[in-house]
Amino acid sequence: MQKRFFLSAVALGLLAAHAGTALAQDTFKIGLILPMTGPFASTGKQIEAAARLYMAQNGDTVGGKKVELIVKDDTSAPDVTKRIAQELVVNDKVNVLAGFGLTPLALATAPLATQSKTPMVVMAAATSSITQASPYVVRTSFTLPQAAVAMADWAPNNGIKKVVTLVSDYGPGIDAEKFFKDRMLFNGGQVLDTLRVPMRNPDFAPFLQKVRDLKPDALFVFVPSGAGAALMKQFAERGMDKAGIKLIGTGDITDDDILNSMGDVANGVVTSHHYSASHNSPLNKKFVAAFEKANAGLRPNFMAVGGYDGMRVIYEAAKTTKGGNGEALLNAMKGQLFESPRGPMFIDAQTRDVVHNIYIRKVEKVGGQLFNQEFSTLTDVKDPGKTK
Ligand code: VNL
Image (cartoon, rainbow, N blue to C red; front, side, top):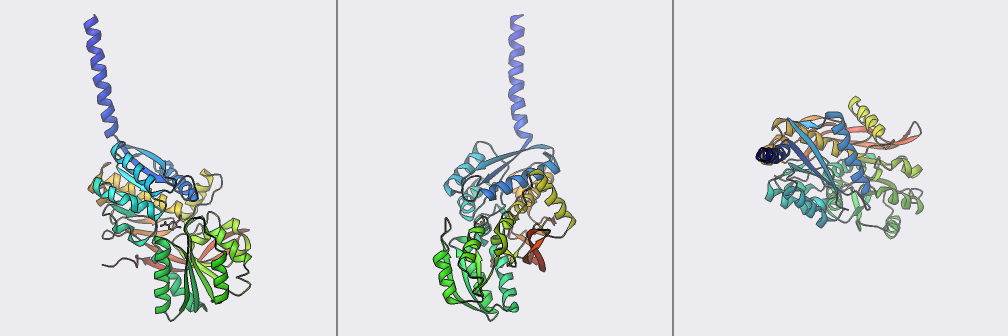
């Protein structure tokens, strides 16, 4: 009797151990690393909400496996991002790393993706060179050169000949400055000065004073998502608009997340970007309505769309590979072509970077709310930052 009990206990133990491994193999793990606290928390909040919406709409089983989304806060510190990524790869054995709210966070993690052969889906960071930092990087956000070149083509044809640029002093800002300036000069325009402000806690006042003195037709700005409202406020306080200086930039400054709270100073601002919450398509209307419903009325911004499309790319690759990992999973991400809430979207198999439309938009009041109203489209824009 006792012996029998012992035997079945052993059997049960073995069974439990076996079930444990079977369970692990039956799971498809996504390690989502985001800035959930600190100055870039809005980016983390938008992307996490979008990823959860995608899962709610598409189910939590893919390629025969249960999807496990593991969300981690890196507080926007590169060493923390890297450490979390390492833990997710070594301990949790994730199939894919995703998120990456800022360029330095993506660059800190890229070598680990290469060493561990883990696909790394960049949903936010937008410096051109990130996809070249590891052959395992796939990007679903955008690149600053895509947006900046579009603006430099629009401006000189619309009465803006003399410009000063003002950018955050790190990867995406430097990309925006370089690609805007080169294209502006190519188009016969003038760039009177190129100003760079610190990435964290910038004080725009002394820079804006300088811009006033230089009297350009327009100031071209790039600041990361979340920082646009402070810039806009100081632009108004310094009376720049009254001095006849227009504000133009990439769509990061008129971020849908905070656009409505910017007030009248934002009205009429023209920017170039890949996503507006007011993009006129049935798919986008559905996306915005579902996102707002699930998040107490929060309007999705371009970060949310990068996260939503990133989940789409991961899910489809997981389907194709029956919940695979490594190079097989990576290869199944390359070349995906689909309709995004932003419009048509393509992951270039050669560059692993996003190809999509860039829209020229003007902030207007629609139904009492400020929106980026798209009025011109450049179709299928590849990253101009890629040299062959
Ligand atoms: C980056 C680019 C970050 C664009 C952003 O917001 C942005 C980046 C946080 O590559 O660091 O709007």
